[in-house]
Image: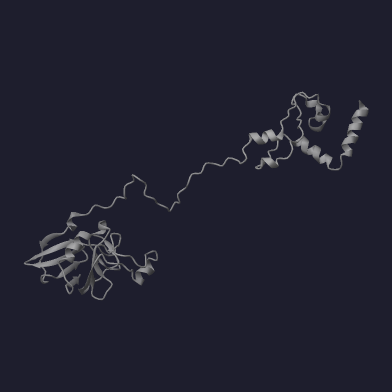
Length: 266
C-alpha cells in the first residue's frame, strides 16, 4: 500500500510545476463555474467529472486526497454542458421603470389645471359715474387702482379692469393711440430679452400670444393697451409697463376708439 502511495505521489510530481497550483485551485473550488456559450455550435467538449469531498468523510482531507482514495460515496457529477442548458444565456435585467426628471412636469390625463385666483367682479366692464374733467372719448388709465376709463360724457364712463406694470415698470404721461392691430404678432424688445433670455424672439398672433386678441399702440413707445391669455392677472402689477385687459374687454374697447384717441396714464 505504501509503495502505491509513493508511486501516485511521484506521478503527481511528474505532472509538472503547474500541478500544485491546480491542486490548490481544486481544493478551494466549492461551486461549479458558470460558462456561457451564446453560440452552442462553438461549445467546447464537456470537461471531466468534478469530484467533491463528502461532508461525512472529514478524515480524508477533501480535495485531491479524496479524489485519490475516496470510495465514490457522497460524490456528485454533473456535465458542464447540462449546466449551460439549464441557465439563461444572459443574466436577467432588473425591471425598468422610467423616472421623470425632478424639474420635468407633465399634464396627466384626468388631472385638472392648477387653481387660478377667482376673477374679482369689481373688474368687470361696467358703467360708472365719472367726475373728471376729461372730454368724452378720452381714455384715462388709473394705474394705482387698476382701472381704465373710457369717458362717455354727462358724468359717465365705461370702466374696465386692467393689469399694470410691476414695481419699477409703472409710468405716467399723455399719449395717443398711434396704431391698432387685431391678433398682433409679438416681438419682445431687446430690454425684455436681456431680462428673460428664455423668451421667443418672435411669436405669431393667436390665442397663445401674450398680446391677446387686440393691441392699441401708444405713441412711439413700446407700450400698448392689449389683451391677455392670462385673465387671472387682471387687477395686479404684472406687466413690463403695458396696460393689460381681458380679451373680451379689449375687443370691446378696440371697437369704441380710433387712432388718435388721447390716453392719459396716471
